Image (cartoon, rainbow, N blue to C red):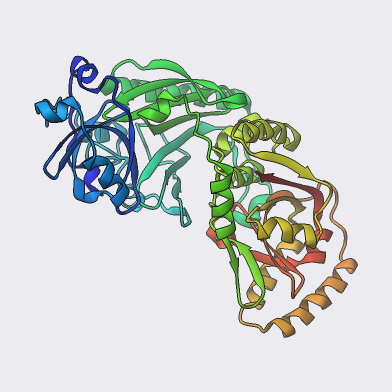
Length: 490
């Protein structure tokens, strides 16, 4: 936890207007790389008094800032600085964080702000396992057992999202058409269909039940919610909102799809979930730096966030979420499943989802395009060398997974020349395998690497860290391909 959370300062609306009118919001960065946008109210010795855009006042030491931000603070000048008038006090909100934790039934908060907490610390006290860790982001996700409750209701999926040192949001999904009717296993068991009742009327009743219970629990402490629009494009919806100490609790109900409760910054809620666009120049530089070149000839894109779809047929929305988040386009697999007309338990109508994703990507300033058939190794090299992953539609049969698992394990530690001969042999033998049926084990994953010397491609599945990187021959990838691929680029 950093110094930004030391003091939480509350003032009246009149004082807020009187002392911050006309002042500019400053972007300040700590020496550890955590950024905050705030208005500087007063500098007094080593103490800096500021107000965030959500109206929360606080005090920090000037020593926490990097040099550029320190210069901004030291050059600050205002009437308040001269008069000594600072509209702050050190009283806590009327509702304590302990009371909020009590209605949630979980220790989400350690103090009055979640936004400066280390993500791993929050996950540790909640006992939510790590899902993904990259140089720029991390996430934690719990697929909860039936005995687990949050706000008195069982969440099927509970997730935390953050940067390297601070939480950005939390999201819990309760009754939903994916997890409630999941009959398949995790990982490769995803394609072995089980038995489960799939009645839309049952789901409808579960959604209504969970919505009512959560509203009653939240209103018992935070009062009546206000309604507002949230999201954009095909994912735009009405949410119920409660604000507390710089946090917005947003209850979202999509009829026939899901009930979710998210915790967002007030700034994000005020912006109705619309994210700021990130410049192409910055993204290009970051993505090129993500390309790892290994001594054995492997070239692999790193820092693609993992999204574990769990035991439901959400490979399409989960994989699209991974690529979209990598390209700085906000995404959530449950919302993508909704717009992609995903059925109960899974099974997405890919053309519908693709059309929706295309609009979301364009609105975020990126380009989304299908490729003509399965890309050649030359095309893959061009994309991957630029740090751009390729969404790949394939037939993930038992035979394919057996090849990928064995090959990935066997190639470790083998010299490139010897291994090239193994791959050449495998490339010739693949033509003798039975061709998968057009509807068999349809799946989507991400091609994120290649080895030109050995003639292999690397791919990653939305099945957790164990499936972060697997390898097959280029000819094998082509053989099992559906000939449907897409890229999100600049």
